[in-house]
Length: 357
Image (spheres, rainbow, N blue to C red):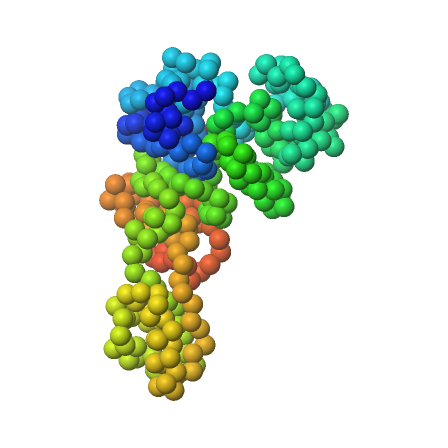
């Protein structure tokens, strides 16, 4: 049951100005995040950004040094048992009983969760949902990494939790299994569950997230609906144009509605005051005898948004933290060499003194 506070705000989780330190490492720093009920919220950031620590604070497994945490309108430090009973958690490296069979792992978890009615059917349904039903009679120690991940996912939904907390849920899965898991996550929110998912895979987050929170160095850099954030960082429509003879594009800046023209090595980028200007722009260039070979409205991706946010906050991040942008800073992007300007990106990876954040 959601408390009145949670029902009134429409938030399942509210984290306010939370800080947490491990020795000399500042894992969380004035972190604020909100998780709307019935939505998928993605925590996106490089390794060491604080995503896993945030999950542990939400469940009450860690106490913040400063700030407040509310889950279902409850304080997880005071009402931790109630909060965790209503959560399903899959960690980045889930703990399973290797000497037990897959079935026994799920049966034991179901007993702990108090799943007594129709337990056998519930276990079978969860296993089938995540494609692990064929291996339930095998010892978990013989499972592949992907099979262990699927077993952990099945375990997390046995008690039909209201809030699902997934830390890298597709780790170790092949592309087909990853796609199936992401589809199931979307299906679970359609059934009323709330999901928080940590990932550094940009392609996974894109198209799945209802709300994205970009983290780095333990704090939230930006949060919101992905489409709203894109409009914030790219308020004017942009079109990529190319022609057989690029000299014919020299006068494009004189056309009505054109705000900015940026010639490039592979195409010319044109910013316009409205996307409705594009047909007129094409007609005008064609009338001038320009043979166009490319007219592509630019739709910024989550990858583009991530790097735009990083560039905006570069003064707040240390040199070492900016170095995690190397190879996308531990993130797994869509391979598109034209998508972003990475001129400010270096090629190191940050480590955090052996502490898993």
